[in-house]
Image 1 (cartoon, one colour):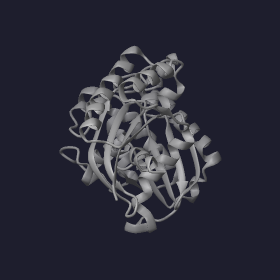
Image 2 (cartoon, helix red, strand yellow):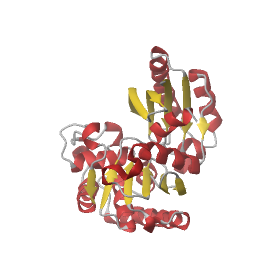
Image 3 (tube, helix red, strand yellow):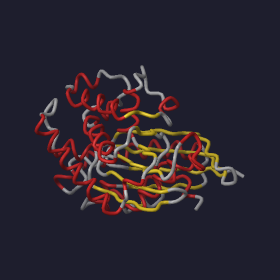
Image 4 (tube, rainbow, N blue to C red):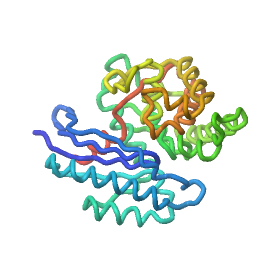
Length: 311
C-alpha cells in the first residue's frame, strides 16, 4: 500500500520539494512533483552569522508555492529539513517561525550526522545488492552550498562527517574575482583539502569502492561533461564521469567569466556564480580519494527525507 508524503530540503543555496507515493513493501518511489528554487538562504552567513532579511523573504516565497502544491496533491505527511545555513545562523528562530506559519510543521534543523545519513539513504536505496556494477562500500559525497557530507557505508552508514566547505561558502570566502585568480583558487583548494583531512579522521575514505556524488554542483558538472543541450535528469542519473573529464570541466568553469558560464544552457541561473567552486570541491575530493570516476545520483537527501517520513 502506497503512502503519499512530501519532503522539503532547505539548504544554503536552494530549497527543494518532493511529493511522492512510497511503497515500503517494494521500495518504489513514484515522483508526483519534484522542484527546486535557488533562494540563497545562506547569503552572507559565513561573514555575518545571520540570515539576511532578503534571503528569508526569498525562502518564504518559495514555501508559499510549495504549500499550494502540497495542498493540491493531498499530501498525508510532510517533513521539512533544514541544513547548514540555518544551523549556523544566530537568527535561525526567525526562519523557523516563518516556516511554521506557512507550512504548519516544525522545520528540523538537523545535525550534520543526520544530514549525512539521509543523503546516504536517498542515494543508495536503489543501488542495493551492488546492482549495475556499483561495488560496495559506497562513499556518498553530498556537496551543498555551505557544507559537504562524507558518508561511507554498505547497507547502512558505517561512518560519516559533515565539513564546512560548499559552493557558496568557498565562492564568498575566496573566489571573488571574475574569473577567480590562481591565488584565489589555490586558497579555496587549501580550505577544501583541510576539510577533507577533517573528514578522513572519522571516515576511512580509502575503503570506498564506489564514489557517489550528490546535489546540484555534481549534477551540473555531469550535465556539462555529457555536453547536454539542456538539463536532463534521466540522462544524468547514474552516469559515470571520469576524473579527467571533471578536471577539464572544473578548469573551464574556473577560467570563465560570469557571462560565459551563464551561456552554458545546463547551468541553472542561480548556480552560475557558484558552480566553479562546486566543481573544484568535487575535483579535489576525487583526486584526494583516488577515484577514477564519480557515479552521479539525482536521488539524494530529498529522497532520504521522504523515506524517513515512514520511519
